[in-house]
Amino acid sequence: MIGCALASSTGGPPRRPSYLVSFFEGTYELSSSEAVIRQRVTKALHGRADEISDRWVELQQSQAELGTDIAERELREEADALVAALVAGMDSSLPVGRIVNSHSDLKRAVSDFSLRRARVGATPTATSLAVLSLKEAVLEAVRRSTDEPEELFPAALLINRLLDAAGALSFDTYVEGREEIIRRQSRQLLELSTPVVRLWQQVLAVPLIGTLDTARTQVVMESLLQAIQDHEALVAIIDITGVPTVDTAVAQHLMQTVNAVRLMGADCVISGIRPPIAQTIAQLGIDLSKILTRATLADALSEAIKLTGGTAPVTHGSAY
Amino acid sequence: MAGRPTTGVPILRLGDVLVTGLLNELDDKTALAFTDELTERISAESIRGVLIDVSRLEIIDSFVARTLMELTTMARLLGARVIVAGMRPPVAITLVELGVELVGVETALDAERGMAALGWRQGPAPGGVRRDTTR
Amino acid sequence: MTQLAKGSIAAAAGAEGGSPADSTFTESDSESATVIALRTEEDLLAVRHAVRAATLKLGFGIVDQTRVVTAASELARNAYIHGGGGALTIEYPRRQGTPGVRLTIRDDGPGIPDLDAALTDGFTTGAGLGHGLGGARRLMDDFEVHTAPGKGTTVIATRWARQ
Image 1: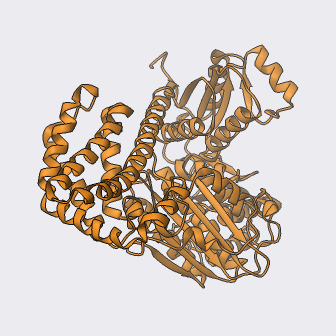
Image 2: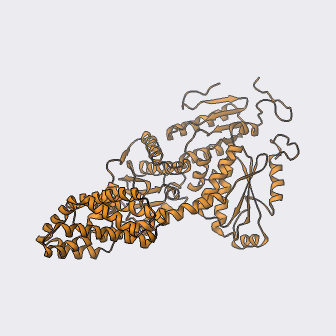
């Protein structure tokens, strides 16, 4: 995490348009009153951290109908951590506009906050509103801590600047969190959709349904090779009846799988090549000549049994 | 029967077959010395088959792969058949992704099957044939 | 490094003729970064051990462990043979909560004159099969090469945890 934070502050480009940061730095960061205001706000945050957490949790709960379905205890822990990190960030020497993205604890707290919402299925609106309500809670605390009305406006600006960055980071993290969930689900789906079955003694089969991309190939290879080892299989049949089209990429992936099976010391038969697919393969000039192919799974199985015949113990009828 | 301790990789001889296994801590120098020693013995001892058990190798990179391919080619030129046995699934997957297919190298699921392919049977074979050429 | 978008990696994986892009990778998690010198052949074994340990630490599956260790072995050997030695650094970046292992392999060798060719299978100027660079790229998720004639070569390769 520390690495991320340091890198983002010094190295890679900021996630948000950089003109925002430089604009604010140019206009406010250099003014002498900035430091004074920051000090006041920081002091208010220090003294009222619990109050802010309480209020924030309260505000979020009042928005519960928008889809934030998180237990109060969890909200409270999360709020305490985030507010504490916010205070620590304000205590640091980082420019206000960069605190959220450069202070590692705060960045992590905001990221965790957003990831949690993504995981429980909170809507983007609810997540945004949750960040906005933090701003509200902080503003309220600052208002109660000062008697100088003319300080309130610059203080509000400062808080806006601080927490708008949190909003932006939160949104990015939320989106990535959702994408991560989608990736995980599609991977689980992949694993579910590639069952390796034992058809005969020392003969395994994988019926492929759908297309065969890199990710899928990796999953198929992994489960097929493991099954070959577990069952001491001599032949693996890859049935592509359910594969809609075979282009050069799919053929390459098939070839890769066949080669991996061979490296294990087993043979591979591809079955279920329908006439239109055979035509496509021929037209594309894909060379599958080194691969044993059969039209149907039944043909492939009888071929496979022949291949195991030399070493397989005698099978008594259909024992399987 | 054990191989000369030149490489640290033991090479056993069973009849006209050499049996050996590569260990995980295979460095380049050992791999090359191993190839030299095997080729020498194939030629000097009229070897017909070589079984290389790789089940203990946690990785095979392109260097080791090339060593195995060269060894296979040299052995073939000297009249011997090489079988690489027991490759682990993750190693096989990584090799094909690396783009190395060990062209021309015969493989077997495990050492026992590899030996069977070289004409050896351990224990009573299914057909009741029992070959014992150790004597 | 969360800022490292896929696009920039794809671009860098093509040909980026400058010196190693310090702007992108100066900051590392110094607390957990491991550096291994690549001076002798024994160092290549040390690399495998260290990279294996790194993938185990992140809970990588056995196939991913093997991929990363193999890629490290290829890249370290490249640096040792072609680059006349160098160093490998192991870091643990995070990308939106997903942990990863990043290998940075630097050498002070002559650099790669034709990077595109070097990334193509079958290209080799030394021992190996010519699968070193291109093959290692296929085993990792993100892959960057920074090289220039006379300025050495730096390869930065990352693989992210699945799920």
